[in-house]
Image (tube, rainbow, N blue to C red; front, side, top):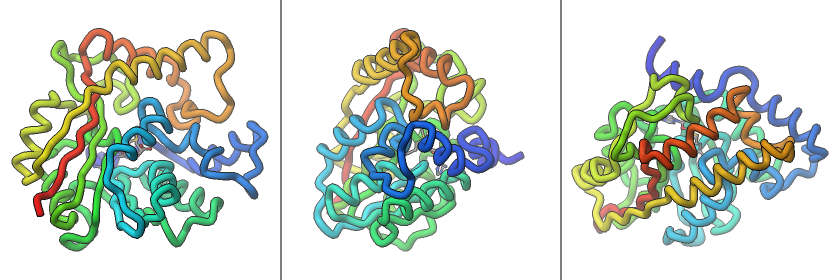
Length: 276
Ligand SMILES: C[S@@+](CC[C@H](N)C(=O)[O-])C[C@H]1O[C@@H](n2cnc3c(N)ncnc32)[C@H](O)[C@@H]1O
């Protein structure tokens, strides 16, 4: 099996869309009238979920009519949110085919097919022309990327001069050696974490400038702790990301929190620019 297939299988196998639909019905959400706000507990599939997307969006200079690329778009919540909030267009690409299928079907459910499109592919080989996009972002994807040089070079290539590029991830902490399973890996396979300073150096090598790094560790930790408490109190929502994380979800969340506390991981949000 290729690394790409193993990473895809890790994230989503089978009919992901049907699983989401079933959970929606269990939670009393009518798929015929569902809103992007109702989808948010599931489709912002990264640490802290929807609030983290909002904070990232607040930091980005997105304009009405922009075309953005979402690399590793998952099931598309961030793309739909940005398209609605900024009246912009978003193209998403993801290595996990069942996620792309779910992303497109959820987009059709909320009637946003004209603004947001998703396709299957690898962020290390983007199927777009040079200088197509006004901005790009990749949320919690790079932990699984074997060659960040190629990934960042591709991101740089498809952006217009002056465009922004944003990245959020669990970087490697000072202590290293994270406990597994974590959201991005069951046992350490397919995991390519890097220290934030090394990621910054690679972004600089790719040509990006004005690189701004925010430490998001404490906020992620509080987010994970809130989820752990809900689970312990028996109050976990029916419609939540455990639908995507599977049976090991409670352990995955506990490890993600513990890794931050023990400085094994170092979560960051990075915003940078392609020079004009
Ligand atoms: C934690 S999910 C994040 C999804 C989405 N960015 C979000 O925030 O809702 C990680 C995603 O990265 C995707 N991914 C991992 N490696 C990739 C690659 N080389 N190219 C494209 N997508 C990739 C996975 O398939 C998965 O959908």
